[in-house]
Image 1 (cartoon, rainbow, N blue to C red):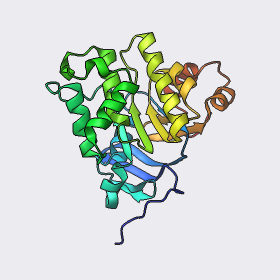
Image 2 (image 1 turned 60 degrees about the vertical axis):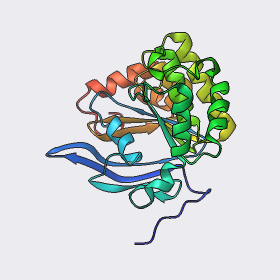
Image 3 (image 1 turned 180 degrees about the vertical axis):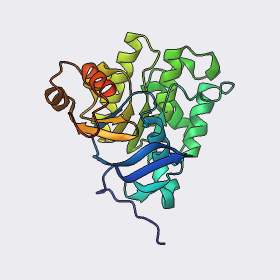
Image 4 (image 1 turned 135 degrees about the vertical axis):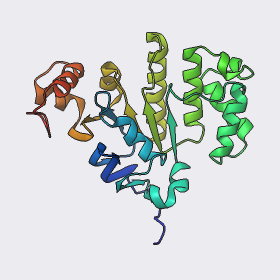
Length: 256
């Protein structure tokens, strides 16, 4: 089978028929969506809805039971290395090596992503994210807010065209969380990259997302901009929409 071909004209990601079955349990069931460049898409759903499994399959860390994932035109199953070179990922639940200094961690990941002059890249991203004073510190000695900024620096060090985020501001105080959101907004506006973000923070989603994919029991049950979801469900906030979807057993596809 011929390798897939990346293209600057291709969407950031195309997912078709994506399914993951563990034993007799279907964690993700026939997902289909396209991510446009320059947009932030939020992936919402309760615990066990399939969000993390979806992100893991898009990163190539988990093999789908069926379906296809293309990132920037590259098929993850056939050309995963080429796709991942143009992606990155950040989650506060995934620790960087704690004994390594911040600078060493950033340099290691710069090399993994094939970034030229890793030391210069580490210093530049540290300056941008206000980490210069922490470069020599062991990563394990950082506060939660500092560690989140280092994780974000790692995620942006290769200037990805597609950034996947899993609860990017979890456990942060309001000021630190607001700073991270502002950095993500500025970065996306500057680069035109795409963001796919799983989050339980509905205020964060309302601020950052152009579009929301609502998941329940492994399926997408709604796909719309935040304001359209509020109108469809007749609610005042996304949190109310989230609770409506999570608590109504009759919601299968779209609002009932």
